[in-house]
Each structure stands twice: as structure tokens, then as C-alpha cells.
Length: 119
Image 1 (spheres, rainbow, N blue to C red):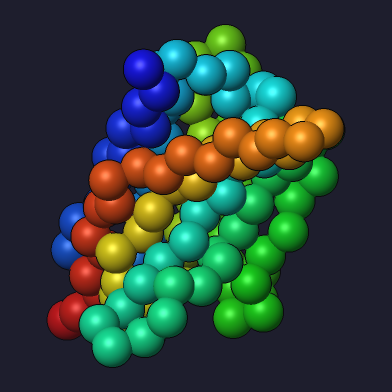
Image 2 (spheres, rainbow, N blue to C red; image 1 turned 180 degrees about the horizontal axis):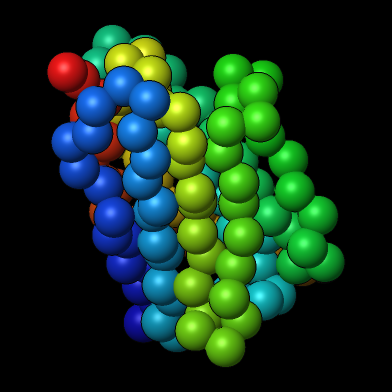
């Protein structure tokens, strides 16, 4: 059974930082594209950041150098370091693991963790 367990969300003041963690069980994080999405009330889910199996990264345009996606293969965990947080970053953040195979695709989601940026 595959699980992605997220942690690290919470309440932070504008300008503050948080680090989200996503630990996989039943999968090897190293061979998946690990990504973070977020969804605010009334809005569509959007890509925040991703890291490929080869270590390449991608970010949503709104990130603008504030966030960093990484992974620790030994801990089977992906991370999202978020700095200089803004109120508009408030959302539920979801971890996603995707692997595309010939004729098949594995796609898993975490349960989500709430990030609230407010003074």
C-alpha cells in the first residue's frame, strides 16, 4: 500500500518560513517525479514545485525564488522549503508522486497540509 505522509504545515506570519515534508511508504521517492501542489478556497489546484527523478526542478511562476524543492533519498522524503511567505500563499498543500511507464502511470497524492500566512 502506497502512502505519502505530509507534515510541516501551520500558521506563520508574512515573511516567515516553513518546510513541508512528504515521506513515501510503499514507493521509492527517488524514481518518481515528486511535486507540490496547492489549492486555496474557491481556486483550482496549481503546481507549486516539482523535482524529477533526475533531480531537475520546476516552479510555479508565483514562486519567484522564494521556494525550494529537494529530496533526501536516504529518508525517502521530499521537501518544500518556503521562505518569504505571503498571505496569498495560504492554501492546502498536497504532495504528489508520479511515475510514467510504457502503457501505465503511477500517480499518488498525500492527504494535504494546511499552510496559513497571516499576521
